[in-house]
Amino acid sequence: MNIAVLVKQVPDTTEIKIDKETGALIRKGIPTITNPDDLTGVELALQLKETYGGNIHAFTMGPSSAKNMLRELYARGIDEATLLSDKAFAGSDTWATSHILASALKKHAFDLVIAGRQAIDGDTAQVGPQVAEFLKIPHVSYVDRVIDYNDGMLKVKKNEEHRMLTLNLPTPALITVLDEAAKPRYMNMFDIFRRSHLPLNQLTCDDLDVSLADIGIKGSPTKVKKTFNKSATQKQPKQTLNPEQAARTILDFIEAKGGQS
Ligand SMILES: Cc1cc2nc3c(=O)[nH]c(=O)nc-3n(C[C@H](O)[C@H](O)[C@H](O)COP(=O)(O)OP(=O)(O)OC[C@H]3O[C@@H](n4cnc5c(N)ncnc54)[C@H](O)[C@@H]3O)c2cc1C
Image 1 (cartoon, rainbow, N blue to C red):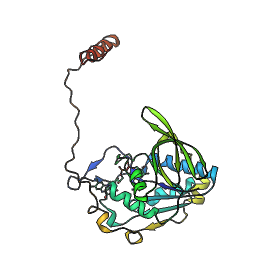
Image 2: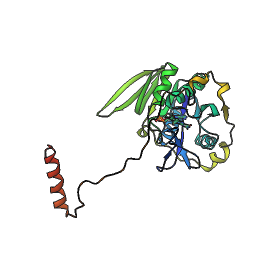
Image 3: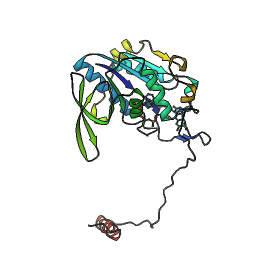
Image 4: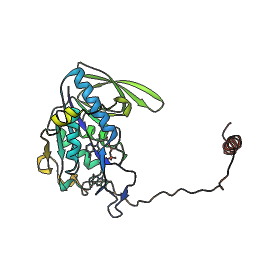
C-alpha cells in the first residue's frame, strides 16, 4: 500500500496576528509544531504499512524551516519526505495550496492519500477534499477509523456529526482523518539518531506542472476584505450566587428564551 501523507507546519500559539494588507497570517518568528491532525495521519499510515506493507511519503508545502518537521517524521518512521517550497507559492490560499500539493502528488502512484481533518491555523478543512478533486480521485472526510483494506477497497468509518457511516472506497483515494483515527506513537532516541538525517526531496515551482496564474496571490480566488478581533461584551451585571441560585438563574434565563427546563 503506497501512502502519501499531507503534513502542515503550524504556529504553536493562539496569539496569531494578521497582516492587514494581505489578510494572511503573520508567521515570521513564531514557534511551530506539526499540525496535530497530521501526526494522526502519519500514525495511521504507519499502522497501515505495518498491516499491509508498502511505503509512506510525506509532503509539505511551506518555508525551508519545515525541513525540521519532515526530519521528525523520518524519526517517526516514514520512508520519504518532500518539501515544496518556492517564493512563487507565497500568498497561496487553500485553492492554490491544493493545486500545488496535487501537482506534486501526480508525479507518483499512490493507493491512498491521507490528510488531516483541518489545520489549527487556517482551520478551513478545505485542502484535503480539494486535493482529491484536483487528483480526480474519490475522498471521504472525517474518517474516525480505517476498518480494512482488501482487493483495492478501503473500508472506513466516517463520523458524520450525529451518526457513524461505514463506507467502502475504491482506491486510489483520499481520506481526511480525525484524531480518533490513531494515537501518535512516541519517537525513540534510536530512530531520532538513526533516521532524522535521511535525505529530503525539495521541489520548486519549476519541478511542478503548475502555471504561475494558478498559484500564489495571483492564483488565489480568496480575497480577504477585512479582519478584526471579536471582543467579548458583557450585557448583564456580574452576580455572585450560591450553586442553587445560579442553577435557578440559568433555568429562568432558558425559560425566558422559550426553552424547556
Ligand atoms: C489570501 C491568503 C494568503 C495566504 N498566504 C499564505 C502564505 O503566504 N503562506 C502560508 O503558509 N499560508 C498562506 N495562507 C494560508 C494558506 O492558504 C492555508 O494555510 C493553506 O491553504 C491551508 O489551509 P488551512 O490551513 O485551512 O488547512 P486545512 O484545509 O484546514 O488543512 C487540512 C489538511 O490539509 C493538509 N494541508 C494543509 N495545508 C498544507 C500544506 N501547506 N502542506 C501540506 N499539507 C497541507 C494537512 O493534512 C491538513 O491537516 C494564505 C491564505 C490566504 C487566504
